[in-house]
Length: 417
Ligand SMILES: C[S@@+](CC[C@H](N)C(=O)[O-])C[C@H]1O[C@@H](n2cnc3c(N)ncnc32)[C@H](O)[C@@H]1O
Image (cartoon, rainbow, N blue to C red; front, side, top):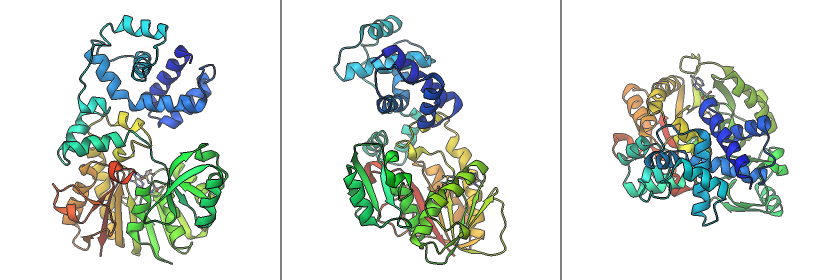
């Protein structure tokens, strides 16, 4: 491994994540295109894994540097070197001498640190760890945060394009080892794969879709039926909308709204690629908090924008955005307004967020159910955990937890007229 090259690449990835607010995968491609990722002495896939793990270790590295006297604001380059230094040390390997000298010169006490608090060891902002302690026992908080440091990949077979058995046989032949979901016949978790899923033909042609189990459960909580009219209040890029079309055999009609024209354009292409009958989908570029319809839909889906705190395992750059403790509170008012508008325009409404924070889950639903007399909060019917017990609504709402369900952390609630 060319240490100087590797530390420069991962430091640049951190720059792109932190300053340019890019997800890790995008930041990595950006850095490789701009500065090149060759001559690092490690393959591209391995280099991506290192970058991902480095971003995930952000709080741990900062804590260690600060506690050995390296200051509050270490450079990205210094963080990258310390990350690599600790990696070699933890793996019991020999630390390359240039790296060892460089780190020990800047941080002479680097080897003295022994006890690290849980939030830093697991590498999350301290406030997040403490906030979770308000709603979960400490052993659960640690297991949850630890589970979010590992990625789970779920595959949905797109039955608009291929039947389940054929897809699974084909994947097996490609060397993909899967664990089928115990309840959902078209869903499986990837245990091992010889090559990246994105390089498999079935993925390239839209016959299989990478979709987290929690995201699938959100749609199952909606129980979409043939020919239903659906208003999707935060639709892009359309993964859940495409599942609604799969479950209704392309017979539902969906009004798909989103504030982002860029994401709506991707949605249009994606739905076609997935074999969705796009003549049944109306895409509307709008602020769905305010839109008014003359008719009520059978079903509304509010898969609101959120802090993404439940999706850290998919993209550890979320951890860095979560430095801003006010993020969930800032999202909350939009979530409430969007949900209230959805209730005005539908008989059944599903509200979901990929957040482990009660501000965006129980607190939103609690407030809305007090203000919306027309609708009742009802059981989602999902066989997963309930909400946080501290809140009155805990017993009717649902949550997925990464350490229990091996998927992202989602909050899901169902309202009926
Ligand atoms: C979690 S994503 C939706 C994912 C989508 N349901 C899917 O399954 O592919 C949230 C979406 O809400 C959109 N959004 C945020 N504020 C909005 C608003 N006021 N009106 C409409 N869409 C909004 C974002 O642009 C983003 O695409």
